[in-house]
Image (cartoon, rainbow, N blue to C red; front, side):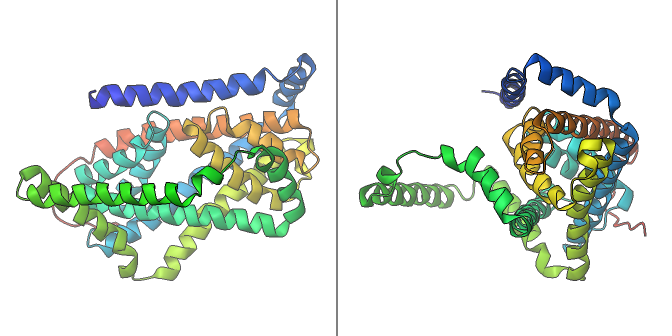
Amino acid sequence: MSKSLGNVLKLIISLGLGALIVWLTVRQLTAADIEVVKGVFRRTKYIWVILGASVGMLSNVARAERWKMLLNSVGYHPRRSNVIYSVFVMYAGNLIFPRLGEVSRCTLLYKTDNVPVDKSIGTMVLERVVDVVCMLLIGAVALILQYDLLMKFLNEKFLSHLSFDTSKYTSSYFILFIAILLVALISVFIYLFFKMRSHPFVVKLEGFVRGMIDGLLSIRKLQNPLLFIFYSIVIWGMYTAMIVICYNSLPETSSVGAISGFAIVFFGGIAFIVSQGGIGAYPPIVGLVLVLYGVPYEVGFAFGWLVWAIQTAAVITAGVVSLLLVSRNFTFNTTKTELE
């Protein structure tokens, strides 16, 4: 199977999953529910949704600054504007193919500032690890602050459905089989690696992996770790602020406390993992979370669609504009530059 065909299949599967989720959630709405949703769209104060989406987009600038710190720590100093453009392109690319955006932003920096792709991918992976930690911390904060509400939500919507028998997966024979299989696979990999170590492809692969490891370890070389932490807080703080600002667009959500924003950011993040770009999965999850805070599901569902649609439109627009701007700077000049 060719790489392009594989990417097309991934796109079809991811979009198909999103379409399936949309169909499953919409078909559960009655005619009266649909009228409520339409009414929400008609009376929404869109200025608040646009303002919230703008704050969400500004978080990408903080993300670019954070990524630039990691690149600087491994000896590369790309222009700040190019880093910002590549981050905006990344989010737009991820709407097309899974992980396309991550590859695109690293490729763009290679073309504009000659930053090796292996180094930038290593720093990018490190960034994603940090984001996972931040997302888990957001979930922990929400759980601590409103334990009873969120545990009720988890039990009713998720945990109560996990009733499969796990005994067969915890037997000593099964664990032994998995251990032997892993050892065998690792042994074969090591044997083939040393057997073919002089092969050009293996040499290139080894260099790429070393570059990625160097990027992953870039956090140890940060000149200002506190600033890195600050940018991480700003990024996820803006995600939460985006939701809280959007609350003002509807009377039903205007009185919802800011703490609920943490819960939406956490569970909404899961929705973006489940489906490509969060399509289909994000609105119902937002609706279910807002029910805990006294908002009718239909209203929360419509609110989720509003936030997702405006944010997606902003991501696409900013990504296209950024791609046009950064393409003017394509060069392979090895001179390190800095735009302060």
